[in-house]
Length: 517
Ligand SMILES: Cc1cc2nc3c(=O)[nH]c(=O)nc-3n(C[C@H](O)[C@H](O)[C@H](O)COP(=O)(O)O)c2cc1C
Ligand code: SF4
Image (cartoon, rainbow, N blue to C red; front, side):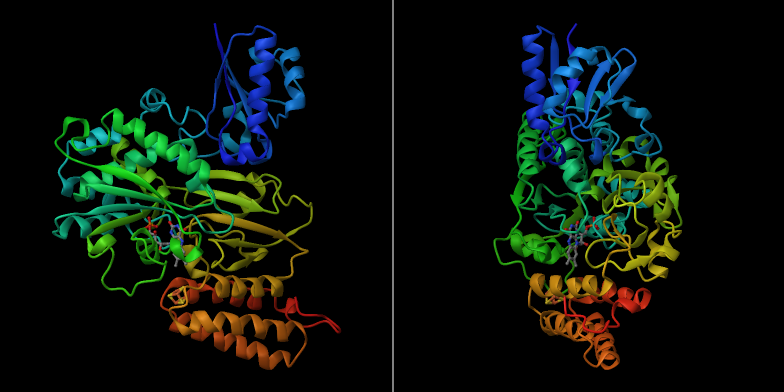
């Protein structure tokens, strides 16, 4: 019987040599006349073990990693086709502690199935939610989402059900569903992993959204730096269309839903929803004034549901298992699970899906394994480049939208970037302002000019020029940006700056002779 061997096709694994490993395994099997079936799965999200090769055995899937081309012959010699021992053997994949302790709802299939196999998707519970949604009217479908407590995973945590209801209740001859796959936040990759590793999940979520609110066309706006995701999505959409899940008469329901991929314009601001819509319309990505809300006047002036990849990918399970099942995970007003992305100076970077409520400390040490450098973790930035820097004393904060808000931080898209005690927090504050200066769309003054002045003021502070006066000026500038900016890029750039000043003040007090960064 043919032995199934899994080698991920996910970008993270490919960047670590997975393609060569897959080729080497195929060649070695041919040379030894071993009967294997090579499956190119998504990543399990244990990046320090990539390329993670798995072999299907009667005892389940056995993992080996990180596997290089040079290891392939030895793996065959050791008998890895029967799950035998080898120095790289990690045992049953599901028993690896990093995976075992997770609560994977959205990522339940990632790394397990062949991303482009419709049969695999269906065999692992795919389309179950869609079938249920097709049998409901719009109001009942939107109610499911509302009752699940699902909030937007793109950053603002706005209740998805309220957004969908606004689109449903706005009469129009045409409505749209737009998926925000610009994934610009530092240290984030969960959107990419879903698009590359379980694309039908996103397609199903978008089709449910379309059917629920009465939208007939969807677009996935994918950041241009994700060529693999674009390719996988294009292929998956074509296969789903051919199988009747998309088109003018979805699964014979008489309802229409079409889906297309659009490549992003390569700017951080194009992830902001109104800029994204401008970009999707073929214009430069500039922020629009609100109101009108995109739910009322969005793409091409029509009512538009715009949601993040993970928001939409969370929808199928809500329909498949019921709103209550999803809502039972989490704490307070943060319901369900969050795919958390560990990055930066950590031993074990990767994807951790947990119910809301897990603490930063658990994530950094139990999952992340502490710093990669072995030095103490001094600061973490949660929620992308506009997130506050948190010191060690706040590591017991549970991941919960309100708990984070209470300490002046945000959960955002769930990216966690760790820094050890060699980090220069004045340098990080400067970087926040510099990032804003580069990425500002330029529409409003506090952001466009303020960020450039912010870089200059921080340079003067670290150079030791009238430190106290310039710190007061920096605080004043932050205040102006927060209160005077049109969107969250200018409005939240001060958060990393202010938190660096508050928790790491000594990094700003110039040592004699210190030069500007
Ligand atoms: C500067 C800026 C960049 C953003 N980038 C992204 C992004 O890359 N991906 C995303 O989903 N949301 C991003 N957002 C949030 C979107 O504006 C919007 O809130 C989101 O697409 C709504 O979807 P959700 O409710 O499912 O989160 C960004 C917001 C701002 C202000
Ligand atoms: S805050 Fe910055 S990015 Fe946002 S609208 Fe103003 S200039 Fe553009």
